[in-house]
Image 1: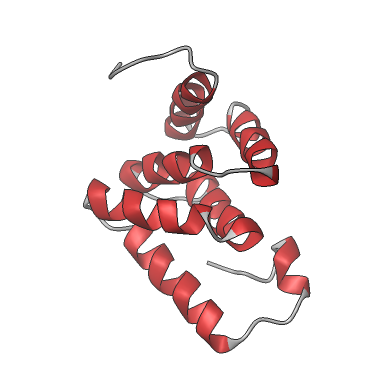
Image 2: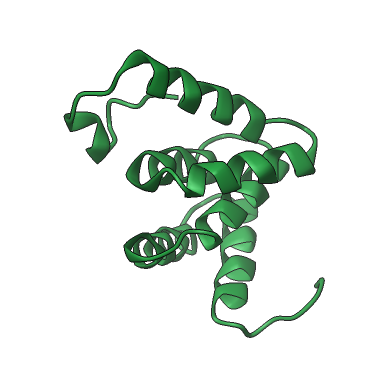
Length: 119
């Protein structure tokens, strides 16, 4: 994952922050959905840095569990980041990968309160 393309990379980051983001990305790519969702939730609390990592996981060539966890993390964003997370989901509706599209459709419906339970 490259952090150079993210808007937040314009400001200086210390090595500890980058290491934390790398570890969370590794956990997000875990085959265990529980571990991946916990990492996604932690990334959601990281504002722009977390948004960049979650967006990469959602749009990148990653397993389905990582995409689902990334969508969960985006749904978990609060405050001013919630609107940006919704925009990322809307971009996913136009993505060429069908898994990304499906995850984004489900996630948007959950964000808007249209779906309850599994489906």
